[in-house]
Length: 454
Image 1 (tube, rainbow, N blue to C red):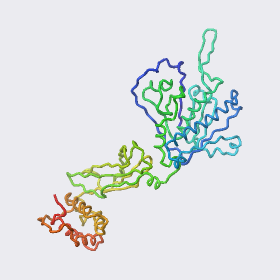
Image 2 (image 1 turned 135 degrees about the horizontal axis):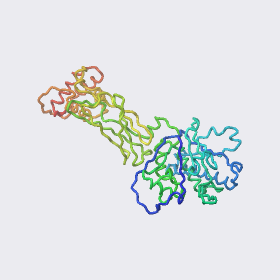
Image 3 (image 1 turned 180 degrees about the vertical axis):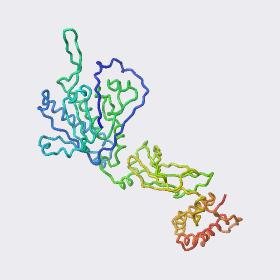
Image 4 (image 1 turned 30 degrees about the vertical axis):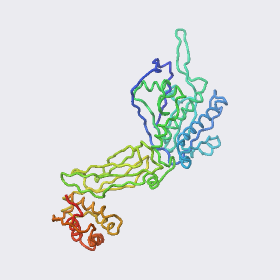
């Protein structure tokens, strides 16, 4: 993919005064995507006096220093708010390739190569191109940046009838500031950023002229007032949203999970949907303290039984989040899978099942969901309390998922659950008694009023 930066000669092409303006506009910030899985090595070829008849030693020094500072600008911006122990995650290495390095083919180790050329080779690029970035150049996986450093001016020519004013390349170089910001812009492309552009041409022209400060170093027409062209917070935010909390370095999915989510769970593993009734799946999670950044979205991908996916997003003001999914008789039956994504860190995959009540009752010999048997085991050994276990049973009865014969309640002289009911639960969880025997104990709890039935 090729990216162009357009240079406007203000005053020659534009006659509109943008110093006083008020626009309502929207902007688009294109994101190309993550480019590196390790700290990138940015290289440039050593400039020499032989490459350009107008180049002087001070020009060679300007090219070298501008390139070094542009790399440093990005590294400093990305490391600015990082803790000391994580700053190295955003390190960008820099190397000037000598003639001997090129002879030894050391450029193959570079992730980004910056070529400094006087003017473009193609005439259709003259006077309007300051820099071009080629991603995955020649299928090498390397990013190639070409920077054109000769300044553009208006030249006067004449014949016996007319005086002509045309664009031309002068002997002078771009200023140090303009060189530096142009290289910084192109490095932004190499890192994975596209262009920042307004939908109103007047705004883009105002940025180009310098009558307004663009909110991004990646503004496509922002090179006439170089002092306004700096790396902005939105640029850093976009890059960090593409990469992992580990910065440029590679990170395994297990590391992403442990670094990003403290927990991610669903309130029940199975949901029984009956005609005319609805139910709610509640999904909760907690972002780790070191990862959380206020205002970023957590995305939850739901994969349905037929393998199609739906995305739900939630902007976070705190580390804890909760989102609900409504179920009804039209909800796909089967297993649904959930996975959360926050700042490119992923949660463990969790799932829940949606079961048709009538189908469940007719196609299975047992009525009680499998997760209740697990709960019965935990209740019997004291891992969960009475209320936790009873509320699950009560829900199943009231939802008519399991059926207990209607009997008159009797007043119990004790608030304690009989030990034999707990023993029945334990034996049923171990398949030592039948489900019917277990439900007899549940029926007794309904009869004495421990479990309330609507």
